[in-house]
Length: 161
Image (cartoon, rainbow, N blue to C red; front, side):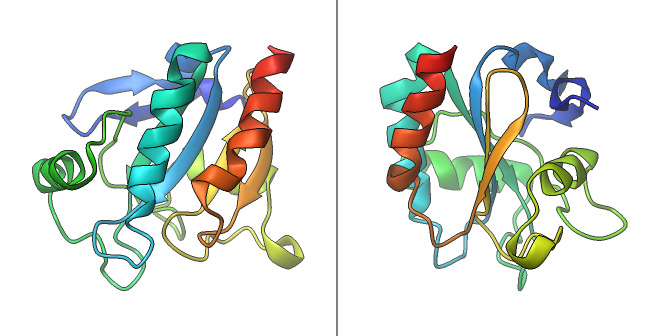
C-alpha cells in the first residue's frame, strides 16, 4: 500500500491522508520532547526552512513508547515544539510506532526500510524515514543521525523530481 493512502491526525486533531504530500520528498520522524535527541527539532526545522519551498516536508509524530519521553498531551507538545524550537513543520497526534497498537503508517515505513539485521522494530525516538516523491521509503536513519547529515540525500531526491 502507498504511504499516500494512510490517514493521520494532525496535532490539532484534524484527520488527513498523506495524499496531500504526493510528489514531495518527506522525512518522517517519531519525536519526543524529553529525549536526549530532542534538540534535533532545531535541525529538522532548519531543513524544512531551507528545502520546504522546493518540494520537501518534515512530518513529526510524537511517540511515548520509549521510556515515557513524550508524556504530554497534543497541546503541550505543540507549545513545547513551537516555543523551544520554532517548529513550523507539520506535527501530528501522538502515535505508537511499535507493537499491536502501532500506527499503520509506521508499520509500513518499517516494512519498507527495515533496521539493523532486518529488524522492523523502531529502536528509539527520532528514527527518521526518508521517502521519495513517489511515496517509496528510500532509507531509514538512526536517532544518532543528524538531520543535517541527511540533507545531501534529500537534495539528490529533490533533483530527481
